[in-house]
Length: 411
Image (cartoon, rainbow, N blue to C red; front, top):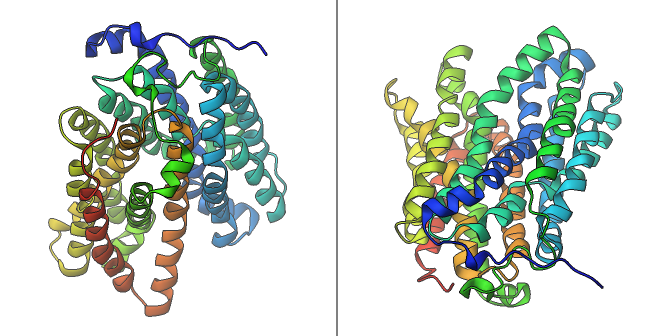
């Protein structure tokens, strides 16, 4: 069977400026695609009341889309990563991008039956799994060595930019046209803009070993079976579970927590919106620092930030200090995906990078999706978010300790 030869990445100049000059088109497209892969999740919250008023569905029925996305990621992301390891990003992503555009648009033509909503979101969730952030990390990591951390930070910052822009797009389009047209617009943009860019920019020489460096020291790496049999992957996975669950709960519940403290709807929304800019700063800042210090030490420190936010929400009545929790949660959210993507390459190498990071990204997604539901259940059971805030306050130091135990890089 004929296979294309991977580009000799090792022959490229090693300076940071050379890396950026040679790979900026790929980085730009990966950032855009990374943002688009998370747009659907963002729209569910932004359009919730509009959809509810139009269809009569319950909040649980509407937000089931978010849970479907998270469960699909948990189940499919490791498999998608293995496809990238074997066939390269181009062969995996282009067809999936087209499928995602069509399936996302299909949400806009769903009927008033909630089962139509669930069915179209199931199709979209499955289709998006080969264009999620873990896929774009696998595209970026082999092409950056000196400034790998910052490159990952820029790529993942696309998610933060989407969090800032998409709610406004949803509000404008839904008001003038309707909520269904939002999904038609997203699907159309994916097919007309993102898909052609991927076709033009993704390297055509990628094949079975495209995400590897065929001549460099990073060709070596731990197999997926080897990673699963050791303790390091499980320590990382547990830390990711704790941090992503904590950040997911704070992100999606912040406005309700602030309203329980007596804030108006507008004031709570304004304070909670600080999460988005903080997330972008966290991604870029963490990427810059990852190229200059040990990533597990950085993570051990930054994973404690949401715990400080929980402590303030539990104990502070100061109107000045209350703006700090969403900033701390946003900074941590900006760090977690980037740091884990980077550490996967340094502790496990690139041999099975896609599969191993896909597994960790799946853990991240299911924790991020389930934690807000658990937080809401505790709120309903006890009348406030007190117990829900204590859980991350206690668990986050454990995640920090787990990161501190990882030791020196292996690759």
